[in-house]
Image 1 (cartoon, rainbow, N blue to C red):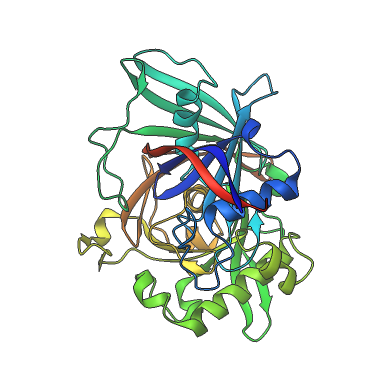
Image 2: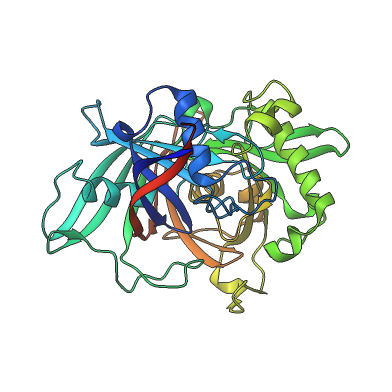
Length: 381
């Protein structure tokens, strides 16, 4: 048994971590590529620990990213994201990771894919290949390198970093914003019944329900939710039923087996006082609403970046589940509470006839390189 060495960079982006690759360093055959990436992460792992790989056995840390020069004249790089299942031999390429989007620009600069100014701000034009959308990443530069340290605090990350501003441009085509037809639809869920849901495709396909639908208040933390197997099973059935309603899967079984990453399921509730996972208080008068999101079968420890995109879009549109529970956003960005604290995200929306159009969603993240070199994977000799 020999081992293959593949150039790789291990990066944090937002509240996620992943292994980054240049496309030129990976097999061109998709199956061979996926087999290699699964082994890099350490999946499938029947023990659910990723002991023999780079993954962290959570939806936030079991991720891979492939970056290449873009063939599009309006973009600098192409970015492909893979959500790797922990216990199944599956990589879901159906959606984007908004958090790791923050690391794509720094990675492209660091690997020499683009030339950035020595100081000031570099704007990296990213083509998000999973969902076919453009992202602008505004990356701070200092003395010829990406500035990674700073005083920008991001709830869910223990250490401050340098702020990277992301602009998700036209995150949903107007005719596809509500794939099931309406800002709020009635979703028929086997074993549960009919529930009110907003099925929106912005950032990633996302299903929003009221927290009470799951018998929750909305302020629950992952430590409580993720030990409730029955609750997680009900959430997955709702998510899978939403995937079918959105035309993303032919059956509930197919959605669970082949699309574990998208659509996401989130639940929302009105502003409330609660204590975040690190023990800090979140005050109801400091937020517009409370939100939680499931990712790869578990409640996320903070908020997915694309979930924040979808949340901001839905909050701006009357008649959605999110808009119904949110206090009005008069000026400035939407501010919402999540398990790790508070996040701000702004959406620029308008109407064209009877259609809602999302021009862009803006949020800030940070990113840094944790390790770089070669990742080794066993190969049959």
